[in-house]
Amino acid sequence: MDFEQLVLSTEDLNVLRVIAQGPVDCTSEWTERVKTLYEKKLVETKVKLEKMEIRSSVYQITTDGKLYLRYIDRRKSEMHFANTMSVLAFMVSVIALIVSIIR
Image (cartoon, rainbow, N blue to C red; front, side, top):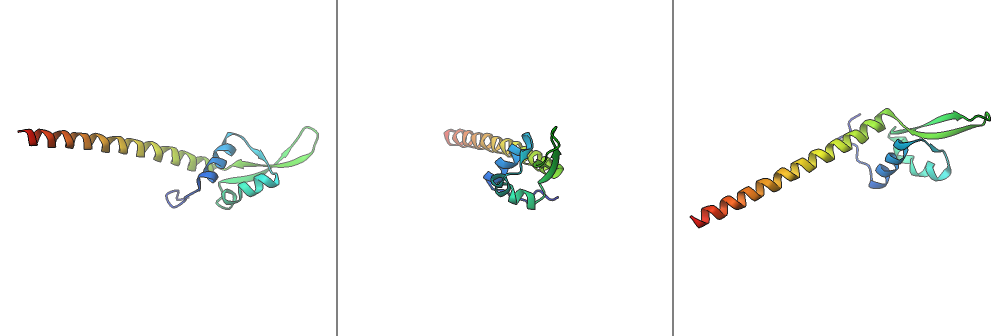
């Protein structure tokens, strides 16, 4: 899956992070919340058997969903590094300008 082309809303990304922490029950509320994620195959439904032999379904994160979250975290750290380097370069250029004006 090409994660560079995939853009999720902040709400969808937060829902994906919640589901990554553990499966959630397939209620009508969660069905609406995971609709986009389900269509993009970042979450899936899984049938679980309880001790009492009652079947119920849960939404859980897929491998693609886990990889997408890793991609987002890595991209965030790369952007943080790039922004830090840009600020440092700006500071060096300002100091160089000041030194060149003074001389």
